Image (tube, rainbow, N blue to C red; front, side, top):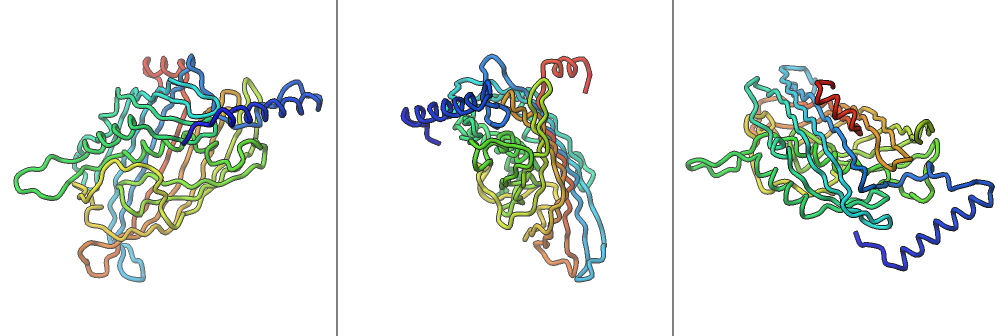
Length: 347
């Protein structure tokens, strides 16, 4: 994304002054800031967020057209991360540079076989920092700092080759969940087609997002998401309460850098013997709270069920695998009080 020219900045300033003048002569003392869903940053006020992603994955074997259930396997995985976001350079008309520091990472996983899972590559992110750039309207620009760290973490998911081993083998990881958080944090303003019009109760617009999944595949599940402003409250600050609904997108959204390339096999997973993934249905809903006073996302909750059909690499008679993923995602803005509670053993 290019930085605005001096002429563009001047035009933007004139536009805001005209809006203020219209509000003044209409009897308003100031422009109603709460209507605008713009991001704001302050070098003296770092942001902190907790991101939690958890899913249950069920693989059922069915027989032929009847769909009779033959067998079922299940696994669970979750990741919880806490980030501090520190504004480094602020440009109210262009791209601001933000430094992310991962304060903590916790990954839990149970395997289909019940055997202990290998350490997740995402554990290596704890204590690391990187930068991104984002505009007041949420347009994201990934820096080399982020991309290099992404590839580094991606490589840590691969097992070391031994002997005559030729094929790359990797362990399951939750890197896609990290990427999902990185984009979702700004998606509310970024997806709004007319940001200068602001929002009001009843405002609705769409966004397209990729979805985290147990393994990275070419046909990554993606959705068309509809945001609807349900309520705007003014208490200590102005908060917009926004509901979400979604439907499957036919083609995957691939607007993000890949953490690894080439062919590989997933170690210790039933996914390694499956292919031809076809996403069948997506059901669920979500809710977000955007802080219009501070200019940032306050919280987000997302729950959905995704059903996917597949086939085996080697035919096994009439057995057909069906995958069902029950996904829960939560983003929460944290305060210094929250930090103290967690250090003292609180949730």
